Length: 109
Length: 122
Image (cartoon, rainbow over all chains, first blue to last red; front, side, top):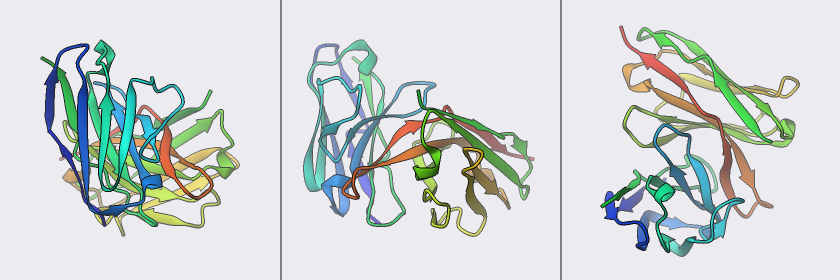
């Protein structure tokens, strides 16, 4: 079972700034099986990125994913007010369990 | 439009049982693998269970194995989670989600319900 560690725990930034979120796995993860989700307060999570770098339907192009092996990154090029939320990475191994990272909160500075 | 609607959450005493339902619409449910994910108050997401499209393949997190059972009724477009021997640490919002698979080379959860709250307390 691969453990995912997200950093930082909280990112304090201003609208318009660039956000870089990290997700590190304890074991190598196939890129096809790494996804990123956004969760706004009081809402269900929403799929942003799958296969490490592919944007889900409706994901703005200011969101991008990259990485392979054990190191993955979610980048938000210019933060919009609606981007202040919690972000989770999730890995899907060949079989469950399919673990989540503990989340990174992006807050307004 | 894909919609997933969970129900069945309640306040239940430790040791009790509860069955959650997730009614699906706007998708071909019978060909969609599904999963349950939970979130304790103020905490992160925890994967709980998954089931294949036909219902014969089921998977569980170690924390619920032997106590929870996932099932589905494709004729009713409904997913279930039977929860037995409930503990305080099972208190959470439970989400159902559709598993998206692209030709066996990727996997993600592309649609989520709004969740149903289960509170285990005496």
